[in-house]
Image 1 (tube, helix red, strand yellow):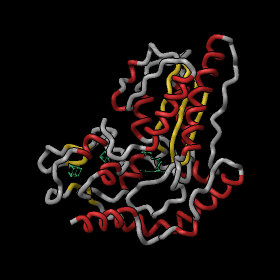
Image 2 (cartoon, rainbow, N blue to C red; image 1 turned 180 degrees about the vertical axis):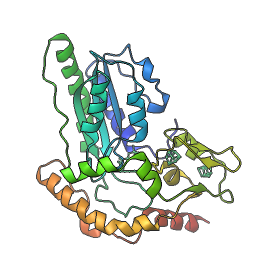
Image 3 (cartoon, rainbow, N blue to C red; image 1 turned 180 degrees about the horizontal axis):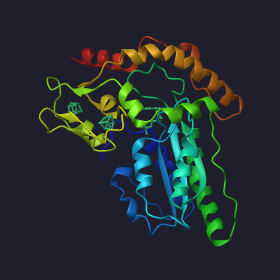
Image 4 (cartoon, rainbow, N blue to C red; image 1 turned 60 degrees about the vertical axis):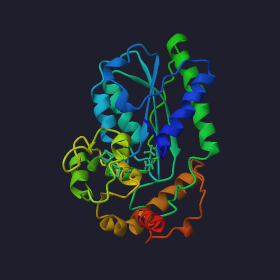
Length: 297
Ligand SMILES: Cc1cc2nc3c(=O)[nH]c(=O)nc-3n(C[C@H](O)[C@H](O)[C@H](O)COP(=O)(O)O)c2cc1C
Ligand code: SF4
Ligand code: SF4
């Protein structure tokens, strides 16, 4: 897959990969879309990582885990990148992996900038992941190999618990944000055939084959997971939606996010890299991109 804008999770996956190689182990890194759930039987340790969507794992990750054959006796680790609120990500993924028989032996999370179209600039987590975050991910890669070897070969029985990193209110919210609920409240998006230049970037960067550009008219279809990557990636802003209702909700949400981030920062788990007072509430990313494209014309 070619990335014009490399996803945060990909950047962190590459660091974990490098850490595993540093620990003198072999490591293969693949996009989830390119992995057959039944093809993992030869591996001693398997990691799965994704962004956090709606305070938990995205729907394609849920589907992937559900399609796994029995994983009894196999070590897994889980990682994610996220903006303000990690929510229920680790407990939710772990519960699903445990159900498949997997042993989950480690967790790694990284704060990252948020690039959703209706978000404000800068976002609270802008500047992440930085060099320190990359080093942490690499160190995790080295440590997880060591832990896996100890568990498998030395009979070490220390298995960490997936601690929720966020307050209970977010964990509760993650549970009501089902695929159906999200489908209902998301703005409907479509491809503007007058401006689309048929470059196929949206299709190539879609994590789940949710776009058919060759269809007439081009369409966004199941199994779309509502990640908005096609919207942020399109060079002509041809994937269109009415973002204003979501922009209007931002100030209230941001007040809650700030409260949570202050708590996490006090525990030493988050570093502010921007001054939160500099956030502009009425200039979301999609408007900034519209201006950029107009300036180029
Ligand atoms: C649809 C969507 C939902 C998101 N929900 C959350 C969330 O609940 N909590 C959070 O902290 N970040 C959330 N984010 C931000 C992403 O988790 C974050 O930007 C992540 O690093 C994106 O990873 P990627 O660049 O690999 O796609 C959301 C982003 C999108 C696009
Ligand atoms: S990325 Fe935009 S311009 Fe390119 S094919 Fe998709 S909708 Fe069309
Ligand atoms: S929002 Fe766009 S990129 Fe994301 S899954 Fe749906 S079609 Fe694919």
